[in-house]
Length: 327
Image (cartoon, rainbow, N blue to C red; front, side, top):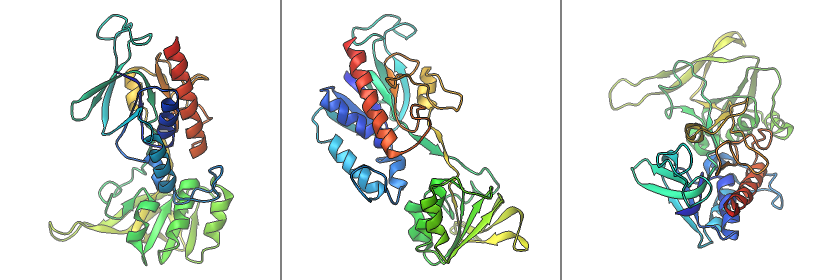
């Protein structure tokens, strides 16, 4: 049985693993995608001590640091269930000797299990969808949720970016370097993004701002034969822009924010705050004793999703774990 299981391979998870190892806690670090949402950041200019780097670079450095400790065991895979062992209300119906509530059992998608005295949920967030006709049909065939990942495939083409936050405007700045033309679509007249990124886009001659409008439908060619997969050909707006409610584009990048990935901890019984994030105390412990949270999934930093807040919460969560195990 591990001292702590950390679910999530992003900034919060990697930082938690580093601190757990320094506390000499046997640590299981698990997750599906290395780097999490961090790998989608093309430029990180606010990580203290480094003027500029890419998200993938920062995530790789964090991973390398975490795995430099013998106390850390990393396993890549999907955790499908987390259950309490021993303790009140568990299947065993009795208190275990490992920690106040007997610890936790993690079941993976392949049926294998691991056990830990405590758990830290660093599961991050999931991208929001527009939920309009054509979005699901053309996902991966012109509809993308990661400008950093897919910009290369749209070199010399016309695309649209939908959203008004940091992710949307940063994505537009990245895409504008390779595409022929870019429509920046936002339902409001002003952006919520950092002025730095907004100004980056305004400096680009190939960026056209389509403000005060929303996407109603994504149109495309479904392909004439089973061997042709189809592609996006345009989109429909809720009101006309420059005389038409339709735009001809080769791709649509949806960047309208994300929702905290609370499915696992919620099934365990962890309470949520009024915004749908995991409710935590000052030690980052959830409403379930021995279960902690860190990063974008928690409400511990006023829902301010940044690398630095995720890392900070990961460190605090481990101190909470250490204190919990000490009784």
